[in-house]
Length: 148
Image (tube, rainbow, N blue to C red; front, side, top):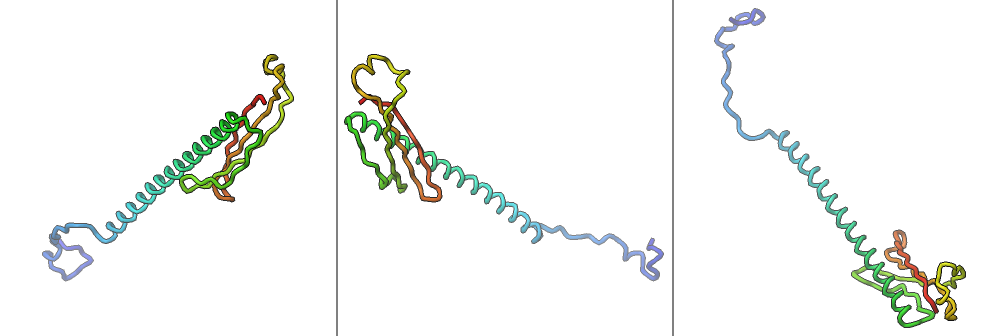
């Protein structure tokens, strides 16, 4: 029966119209899916880029540690009293440098008496390795005590 508010309409005009099946997505659905994929990929790429930068920083720090240890070893083995500072060492595209500082050690309470009676003096040797560019200059320090 037709509703009362549509006078003069034939009852058959209210039969359900069979809709044909539509396959695929609407434009709005496709745009939403593309936006979600874009945001997901950008977050994944940002995470991967952060891991790469962290790995690079860790590698630079290991190189600085090795440089500091090798300069101190060279200083100790060669019995040098002075080693020149360097600021132009380039490894893997990163510029490294180091500064050495020597001090006499006055507090000898912790050392064996035999070592102190030998007539050699105690020296602290401190090396500071630095690398990177000026606003983001990083450094690593290593020190040791030597009998000289």
